[in-house]
Image (cartoon, rainbow, N blue to C red; front, top):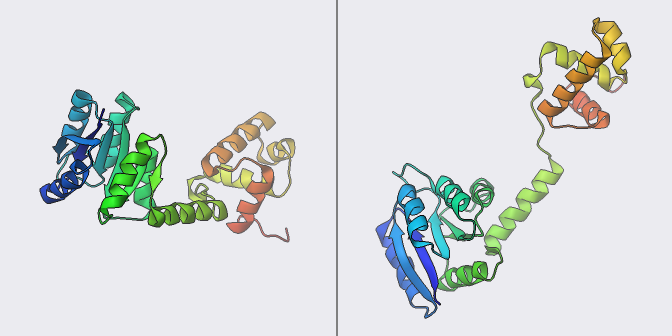
Length: 219
């Protein structure tokens, strides 16, 4: 059985070029093509392709490639979607990976890379060329070195004060006594603060409070 492929790109010339490359392979068959996300979703349900080459932007389409991919895979997660883009930056790569794509190709890819991408995802593996792997690696390192936390501006005045007291080493009872509220209310505020800041230990809250100037290291 040939690998059944659906092409989704908003440029006819691009689709024609990709079709020519793919149909040169005896084990590949292009079973459909479209220039917009809604048609891609409908064709995916109608044709059940093995692989979809999905343009990210799809200018003029109601659904972007990211949205279309997400909806297609919600209906049938056995389809292998490979993202197509002129962009090779972390934002676009992460968006398509989060949508469930199995690979990412630059539109400037070689014929060999396109064939390898389809073959690789059909073998149950993800496909990224060296350029995209470098982007993913860099984004991972940045995330480890600079973990995403919430914004202190999202805290209420009461939550900011409780954060300050927690960072100074006060327990819930002493904080409650100072603010004339119960220790249970203090604990509820602390949970809310942690949720907002995405920080889940007193040590991390203390470091955050120092970094934001909520307390000073010598207090």
